[in-house]
Amino acid sequence: MSKLPRLTVIGTGYLGATHAICMAVMGYEVLGVDVDASKIDRLNAGEVPFFEPGLPEMLAKALDSGRLRFTTSFAEAGEFGDVHFICVGTPQRKDSEAADMTYVDASVTALAGHLTRKALVVGKSTVPVGTAARLTELVRATAPAGDQVELAWNPEFLREGFAVEDTMKPDRLVFGVTSPWAEAQLRSAFQPVLAQGVPVKVTDLQTAELVKVAANSFLATKISYINAMAEVCEATGADVTDLAEALAYDDRIGGKFLRPGLGFGGGCLPKDIRAFAHRAEELGVGQAVGFLREIDGINRRRRARTVDLVLELAGGDVAGKRVAALGAAFKPNSDDIRDAPALDVAATLHRMGATVTVFDPAANDNARRAHPELRYGASALDAAMDADVVVLLTEWTEFREIDPEIMGQVVTSRKIIDGRHALIPASWRAAGWEYRALGRP
Image 1: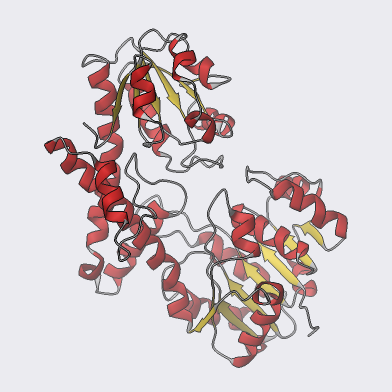
Image 2 (image 1 turned 45 degrees about the vertical axis):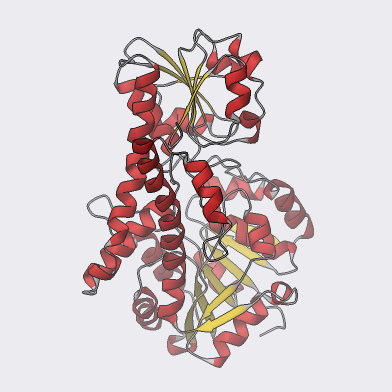
């Protein structure tokens, strides 16, 4: 193989498109592959099919270099690539909490049929532990090159809104391999990243599979811990933000992810902790991670409690009331609405009879497709027009910077719920607003 192997990236969703674009910018010849022809056409035309800061500019740069192109042909991928990254989704199954492996199995099978020479297949998708061993047998039974094809695992740790940074200079790389050759190929495939001094952990396949779900489970636990404390604060009159700040001074705890509020959502943490718990039960060690069920429960309760706060400010009944919902994406700097707490709250209020108007700087279109029953504003002030209650649900910077006096001029009642602890309470109260937040008196 050449000093810099040629890379294919199977799956051009959030993970795959980002990986393909960034690797091309770093100097690799890259072929992105997807069964969705319309997505391929958009990418080849220079259009990123989702919102991610900085990625459109990177795509233009990669296409201009001539090192990146996209195709629907697995035959072309098999002929082109030396290292093949599997980056397809593993959503939660509709009939259980297990991860749906349909897309992983289909993509690996389609690729393997065209592997006629020595190559490395690298899984990046988040999968149940044991998947890599199963796929190894699948590849070797399907590929014309047989056991010349090896399989490795390289979990991703992208943060939506920071995906370019996390790809170009991650905080670590994990290589799950079964041979020195596979490790050498991965090192070649990440040469510019490793040259920056990024630490790499080389381990076995099953440990590499576990790293991602273990990391997500830890983050989910930390988020839900402080939200559990918020429930206690609500019952006692204590202030959860002061509590979190005091805890953060302890180096053993730290302040990252110790932020109270509406809770986590998106396409990773919720489904990953459920799939992890499900897989642990299959392996007979369900009790070891049984706490994840309570973590999930705490997270879901934050949404219900936010609805309760809206009810309180609305006088006990939202029927016929106007509610402005600021935010739809599960986090700022993203248009991702998968399992978004913001939309869950907005839809619940609508079902209770409220007229809900949503505004999100990036996710309005996605939200409208998923929830056409809601109304949508063209700006935060537009959404707040004649509102009886305003509820901040996604902590976009532009929402943090809203002038409470200006917004106060368009609403019917100056009542606001800060679902993300993103606002300065004193500023809003000074402007005559009744301010409420989860876990604060």
